[in-house]
Length: 316
Image (cartoon, rainbow, N blue to C red):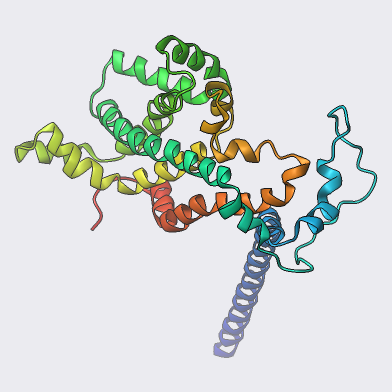
């Protein structure tokens, strides 16, 4: 009898070991497959960036030989049919810094457009966050039909693409007499509803008991906003700031419609109008243009992840 029980226990143990081993093998296969798929996707996303960086160190003649047929135009201004295969080169035949020298020293208009981008984006991000935090605090703390209607209108505006509201923005700017000035870019950007919507949802995750405890201790609305809401929403503010910076850093339609003077255009407009005579400079300008959002993302990556996964409350 004991021998039979021992044999059954051994058989059950071996069966459990086989199931565990099969499960571990299956889990390893799933992890390996997922890793390979994510690696392929990552490489696909990185190839354009790598090409841009490496091609910025190519000479103008080498870039024209590789990509000239893509940007070539006919005498009437039409595009030329590409009859040959375009060469994608990751390693230049000879490293050249001539493009960076032209952009940084011999062509100051590119740096002027770069600083135009900074002048537009930094005030928009800072002031939009300030306005959005105040509005979001009000939407999250107080309930009512009027508040619900106003917040619903914000949601509708967020769902609309900017191209839909571009004509009304132009008409309002023209009525105010700010068309052709930097205010035509600043004002619509500062009062954009995107940050208000996100931060309102973020503030609502803070337990109401936190505000009630502060009220019992005698805190006013401004103290609750500045000492409770803002610190708890720090990761959300950084997340929204990164998204706003990238969004307005790449704006093209607004300057084209609202700023007839090309001297006021940001660098993103130049990158959208590359022609055959500026291919070699375009790669160097694109690399310089990528640096601020890349540095901002690397600095605020942890805040961005925390802002997405945050569920509210006070950390222990």
